[in-house]
Image (cartoon, rainbow, N blue to C red; front, side, top):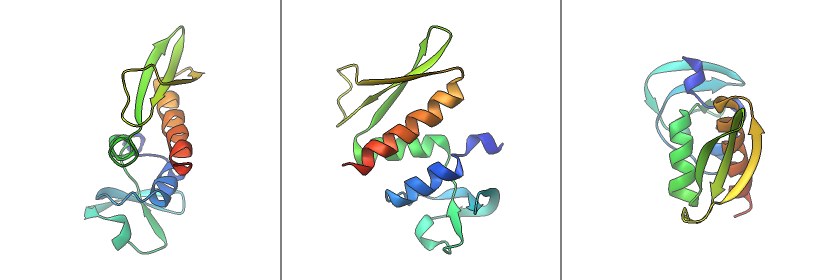
Length: 119
């Protein structure tokens, strides 16, 4: 079940970008635990960080920063494209090769977060 949630590193970076959505799990340091009900990041004590689902991170980056990520099947693995400013008519910037879709997804979100920090 824990693979449904973003990593601690991503959760922390999203919080720094202003992510404040309801989440059904939290991180205390780097340990994931679930809670009963949903919590918003800003209402949580400093010692814990909300753990968003991958889909929540994806939507947040798209809605707030105009970042759209495409995971692509390439020869023997996966890569990803990042489109900026809601512009999906071009190919976007191509990044890397990853053996699994899960590694590509994590790398794509980390790269998108890096780009958002520059905006």
